[in-house]
Image (cartoon, rainbow, N blue to C red; front, side):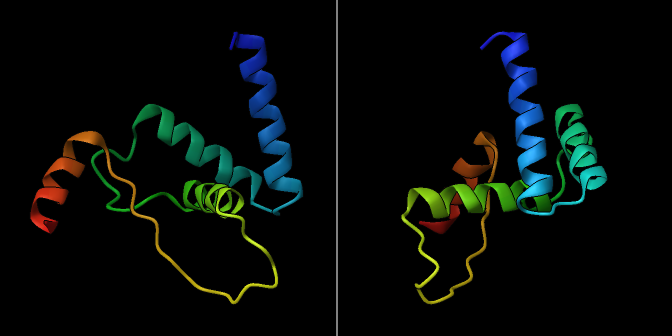
Length: 92
């Protein structure tokens, strides 16, 4: 993906998230910038609000989510590579 395609992708994603899903534009951009800068590292201990929403929608799409299925809540817990090995070691 070249820079023009990347910019186009981000603009389309921004438009989709703020129009279709009514995410707050300022909060979304702020979270993206903080993520790029690594401003929250090594915290927070969970996914950022908008990142979790986007990931949840992707998982629902890939798992065949349908509106007529019963509602169930699940938490997403994404970790970086170094921490996940340690976490899995303690969970097993």
